Structures are given as C-alpha cells and as structure tokens.
Amino acid sequence: MDNLPDIVSGLQQVFMSTAFMWDTEVLHKYGTSGPRYTSYPTANLFRGDFGVSAYLEDLEQLRQRITPVSLYLHIPFCQKACFYCGCNRTITRDRGKIAAYVDALLLEIEQAAAIHGHRRVRQLHWGGGTPSYLEPAEITQLMHAISSHFDMDGSSSRDYSIELDPRSIDESKLALLKGLGFNRLSMGIQDFDSQVQSAINRRQEFPMVERLTRAVRRFEFSSLNFDLIYGLPKQTEQGISDTLDKVLELSPDRIACYNYAHMPDRFPAQRAILASDLPEPSERIDIYASIGERLTSAGYEHIGMDHFARKDDELCKAAREGSLQRNFQGYSRALAEDLVGLGASSISQVGDFYVQNERDPEAYVSMMEQGSLPIIRGIRLSEEDKLRRYVIQTLICRLRLDKRAVNRAFSIDFNRYFSGQLQQLKKFEEDGLVELGDTQIRITEAGRLVLRNICMLFDQHLGESSAVRFSKTI
Image 1 (tube, rainbow, N blue to C red):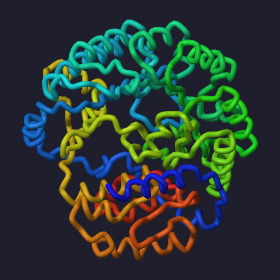
Image 2: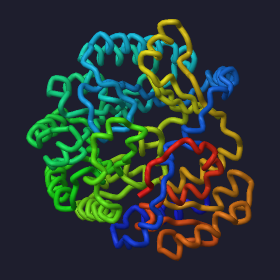
Image 3: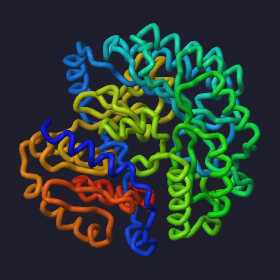
C-alpha cells in the first residue's frame, strides 16, 4: 500500500492523544441507546431460520482452510450473583450440574474439530460466568481435550486467556493455568470502594487481589488485565480515584473500563440496585474522564472506546499497527480469521456466518447428549453487511477511516455512497467529536465516548428489531 506510512502515522497520532478536554453538555445530548458493536450485524438480528444447512455447506468448503482459528469457551456458572452483571450466567453450587456441563463441552469440542478441521489455535479465551469457578480437574480435562482435537500454538505470540474472579482463584490454580498454556489473565475488579462493592454484592478486599497479582507476576504470565466498571451505584470521582491508586500500585498490563448498563427489565439481578444510587450522566462522564486522565498520565495508552494498555503491550502494538479487532470478547489482536464459540450462548464467526448456540445451559447439555448441533440461530452476511461491518469495525478499532481503502476494497465511491451519513456527521464535527476530510474520517479524543453513536449512522439494520433494548451509549 503506497499510503501505508501515512496511515501508520495517523494511527500513532490518534493513540498517543492524552487530552481529556470533554464538554459534558455537548456529550450529554448524544446519550441515547444503541448497540455495543461487538459484531455487525448485531446479535439481536440473528434468526432461527437463517439457514443452518447453508452454513454447514459453507463449512464444508472452508474445512480445508490452513489458516488459524480462535476458540471461545463459555463457562456460565458463578457461586454468587453480582448485581451489575448482564452476562449469561447461572448461580449454582451444584457441582453435579457443572460436571454435566463440562461433559457436554467435551462432546462439543470433539464435534467442532470434526466440523471445522484440526486447525491451529492462535487465540483461546475462556469467559463466563466464572471460568475459574471450575475445579482444577475440570479445567485440565477441557484443556487436554482441546489439545487433542486442535493444533495448539506453542509460540510466545499465541493469545490464550481466561477470566478470573479473585474470590475463586489461589496460587495453586494459577500455577495450573500456567502449566496448561494460558499466558494472559483477566481479573474482574470493578471497583475497590467498599460501599460500591456492597451495592453490587461483590466484596473482594484489596490485599487478596494484591497477593494474587504478585503471584501472577511470579509465574511470569505474559499479560494481566483488570476489568473496571464506571457508573456503578455509590460510585464517586473520589472513590474511583482511590480505586485507581490501588490499581496503579498493582500495575496491570491492560485495563478495560466498561460503562455500566442499567437494564433491570432485561437482567433481573439489577433490580437490587437502586436507580437513585447511580451517578448522573454528567457524573459518569466526569468519572470516565478522570479515569482516562489518570491512566494516560501513568503511561497507559487509550485504545478504542474503553481499553487502556501499556505502550509495550501487544494490544497497544496492535492498535498502532491497525491490527486491532473488536468481537464478542471486546478488543483483542486479530490473530485468526474465524472464531469458533463453544458452550451455551457462545457465538461463532466463520466465513459469511454468525451462529449462536442454545443459551440455556441445561438445554445445551441435553442437545449435546443427544448428539445434536447446539446452534439455534444465526445470520448470513450480505455484501452490504460486509461493507458496513468494515466501516464500523475500522472506526471502532482504529478511530480513523481511510475512504480510499473502502473504495478499493468494495468498488464504491465512499463520499457518494455514504453521502447521507457524511451529512449527519457534520453535527459531530461541529461539536468537536470527529474530523471530516476529503479522504478520511477521524475520531477525536472526545469522540471516543460517542463512538457507538457514530457507528449507528452506518448501521442499516438499526430499528429492525424494535423489541430489543440496548444500553445507553453514554
């Protein structure tokens, strides 16, 4: 590409920006509801009649691919309910129920290898729920099954990660994870403030997290991520400042800072949270601004909408080089073209299809015991979907879109094809949220907070499923 140096230089300028001069009143008017764009088209558009036979035919043509693959395993179980959580999870202490689910996962791993071929696994992620809630023997059994049916990448460039609840992990389990090949860990912190922890039913003391973090460093994992959430009940700027003092003391490699989505009608556990305890929208923006200022001042680079990484971290390098991707696990490096999801509710992105497994864990187990394919819905992407996915993914990952690259890839005239969207973007430009040029669109630092709003302009399906409620964009 002749213009590659210009693109790389532009990306570096975007990701090196540390100014958080945000106009709260301007941003407040963009506080509508919208998708998070972990996929496009979004999951609410998946249908039961998407054509599973066409999907299997497509897979038959793709089976001989020699390209690597990403695997995602969903472990839905938790010992206690965190009131803020919007994930597909099951609260249980019934180890028999968990063991039955693990047996079903073992069957699906074998099934997936037969369908997709024994391809090399460059990326592996275990999410939930609480994957670390599994017994050591169950974790070992699942990892050995994956190794038996897929070609596991043993290089240092692999990305094998697992989500941890500090309350369900100890040093012996960390040692096991290291021995099994995991090299990246993500720890759910949310907030260290005791009042916030009580309000969300998730008490975890700082000394416990500190002890685990030291053990992670001692076992030499490649990367440690902390998940934080802003907009939680009882949260204040001072409280989040105290939390950041503790976070920076532990110095994780990455920090994901998510916006709490209060949707009690959709997630019953959130009914335990009083709406009056939630920060006002202007307070949420101020809290997020303070997080951004502290983290960038401490040497982290702001990535995409809600991630931060140290300058030498692989995620930060991917952001600079333009190889960052956003999928159902958030932001990550683009190491594989296809993503295969395993377990209840997991989503696969393979070829021209998105497909999702049965959401209910017990129904999923029953389907696997009967030898059925656990897929219940999906969607086949049209050429128009691919074009708009490219635009949305590029904006949400690179914060910059080269119109010429779109023209070359899809044989269109961007300015003419998206003339309506460009006209709508002018109000964002007037508010200092984007910069519109003849050949590019660039998101400003303040524009990160309205990235979802900007992407919504290019979403041709928005509004097709009126029954679905999305979270607030700000």
